[in-house]
Image (tube, rainbow over all chains, first blue to last red; front, side):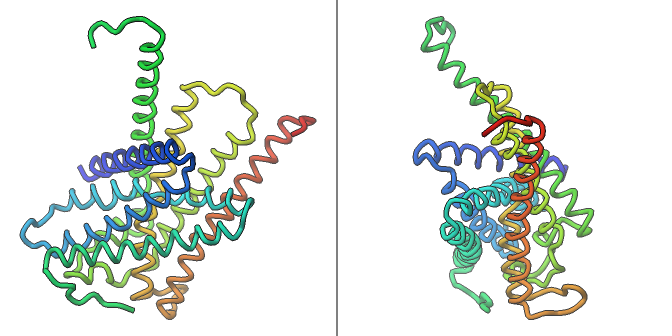
Length: 134
Length: 183
């Protein structure tokens, strides 16, 4: 059952990313923004869901659903390999842009994770509570 | 939709829709397999489903101490290398025709399997947790920020090097295969 949830989540996540990439490359003729967007949005959602699943004692989300969303869907939606391949092709043309892209990707994703967690916490408790910083 | 006329425009349109469905199905299948393999490797290496689902109390879930996320690191490096190989193979193969069937297989492996196999959300989660709590590396407790930086740099730099190695290997293979072929 758990494995089925993971497979289903991975399939949905991969398809969502695929269509996002298709839509963005059709609109802006570049896939770089799509990977950045997918990874940042995926990290944001992970932060949101992690806090939501733990803080929300009312709904008591079953473990299968958490596996489905956090490991299956978000794991399949975000991607590291495409990021690495894009980074390689960028480094050859302009190393400065590649550095900016790499740093931006990591920093924005971690910030998105924190913001997602903070928003989820704010929504559930009506306060920023005690988010340990540093 | 019962009587789709056989004129060229609707036939082409039907073909496009059919290809889109086929590509989507290919990506879905690849994504499912990739995600399952990722979790399988995490379970084998880390003994459980990674750091994400470890039961802790309250907000501290995000900031709980963890063991060094070696599984995620390895998965991202291996996946990057493999994706690099597949893409380099396509780049270095001089093909004029690329059928929809080949495209579907290509998407199954790239956008589906290897992209879903690697993960960025768990990576950023690991970076944050390491930054706050640190972990033992080589049997020592380093400053948490140093551990987070080490993990981050190791992931990005080694994956990048793996992709470059994959392109170099593929390039060499194609050069020997098509010896005398000038580019």
